[in-house]
Image (cartoon, rainbow, N blue to C red; front, side, top):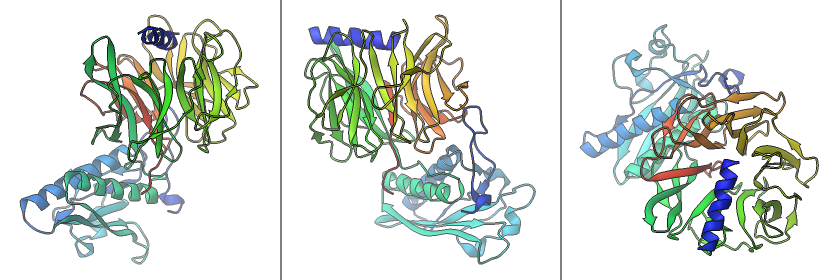
Length: 449
């Protein structure tokens, strides 16, 4: 069990020192990827000719199109097919120009932008094929944000989420965050790995911890307000919790021994984790989210770690164990009973991540000694395993976006470990990090919009 043995060895060393027509679906695994609802997005027009407003409008247009293209909820029609002209308001939109065979858009997003102390966007979405003029307007909003690059990006993310919420068949994720571990400086005898946050598209990367030590395995609370993680700064690894908002710590009682891989229950009241407090091997425990009222779930001489709750029901926990001789994924009831192995094809299976709908588990699998680690999805209803990454280094630590359409993961495909994201069918791969070594992504739930 490569990951588990590496972590245990590392620990030992450190311790010693709209209507149905507007809805969309996406199939799991090798499904359809981006669905067929077409939307045209002509440039939002700056209301004044100054350079700053033009720059803000250009950034807004780029981010909006990128968000929609990556959403898996719509297909953005190529701008090369658009009719000529500037499309600033309703009087400029002639539906017949956008529903020709060449363009064939069902929806159009259009509007204008001003930047005069704040960024303000007049944003509209029309259903071009609505049988009535009165039913044409799907969205009509004024979106405001700070007059800055970050504020402009946020305004675009907000509008993209509105569009996906309305016509994309799921909740938009453009305002979500990804937590990850970044190693950007060296600390002599031990690596300095800090907890970072970034926007879902890789922008605005910020350190949350400044321990000058090692932290690993971040996990979001269900309300996306807190992050639990494993910290080595007190010697033996323990679980710590910080606020996403102000980075302040929350107390978590130390159970003793090696304590690693926290995971929140769906209601946020409990945390499951692995600990060696009662012996040399790690076992799965559950406690209140502050570490109190500890209860042991697994009993044996094998190493058990990486628990993760079924987020839909809260009645099951997947975890990793080497009880069969190699790391494999098991599922048990939340009380520790009814333990069963997830797959029987051998190799090394690790790092389970339960889908938001509770129907699939993404995981890392090295099927033979000579193969790479790749991301797979196990469909619980059928037992089918679908390979998502192929022939591109080692790909590990999958984490689900809250829409169930996207995964983030770490990969060595560029030489160093970096964070990537993709659609569930393995397309639309984005590299999110480039500086230093970056691992262990954890995708937040939906944030307050």
